[in-house]
View 1: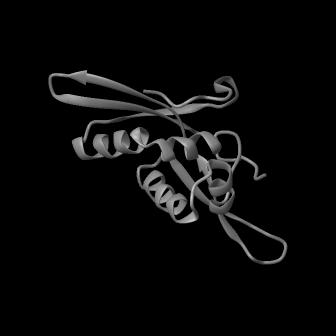
View 2: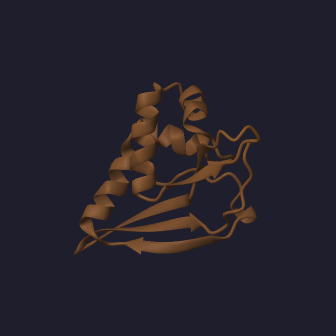
View 3: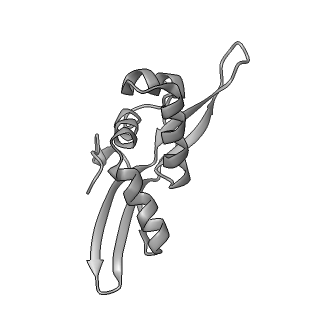
Length: 124
């Protein structure tokens, strides 16, 4: 199971291994969810606010917020603050993961998560 990568040659990645059964299950649950995958896909190239994600992914805003909570909790998304000239700052979300590899051995499942190491992405 992997998440689409727009241009892997343009970004450096850091890999980490997840072995804890609860953490593995949380990541797999998030990746299994169709709405979570839609949010991950939408945040692949640019940071988007919850309302923008709701529109792009054709999800109710309440559902979008629930999916954002799940994805930030498991570390697949990063929440940032979008500074607006009018002083009404908003949260925006950016995908932090390039890919997830699943390995199975005698001890259970192990995930290798490739995370984007660049954090200087621009807002829309």
